[in-house]
Image (tube, rainbow, N blue to C red):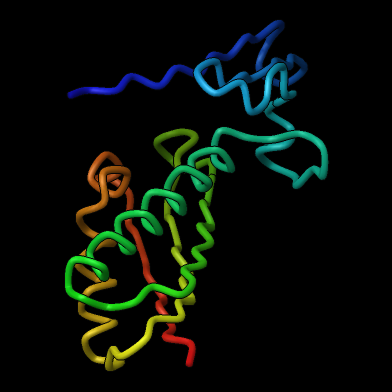
Amino acid sequence: MANVSTASAQWQGDLENGSGTISLDSSQVFTDTPYNFEARAEHSASITTPEELLGAAHAACFSMAFSLLLSEKGYKVNNIYTQADVTFAVTADGPAITKIHLKNQSKIAGISDDEFQKLAKEIEATCPVSKALASVPIELDAELVI
């Protein structure tokens, strides 16, 4: 069964001076959240960016897929924390997402660090968001917390 999730964005004005809003239409977790181009170049505490939203999706997908794989292998999942740092840069080819750095800390009972690293690397390559972002270099730092 396929599930369709819907989000929308509205933009007004030119790129440098314009702004818009983003809404998660399916869940309505947030609506009319502001975004603009300036926030992509400079961090803002109150304005999101497409890269931040992409990072949230990637971190959530990695964590869920990792939990599933670990559970299927018989491990008890206590806690999985994943942070995604998404790099946006203006390159010779234009604006681009140039790298995603996943930072994971997980508390998993009964697993060796070697097995943990192997499974983390497997999920980094196979979670649905990672597959959708196959053209972007993805780095993974996974730490088993005891």
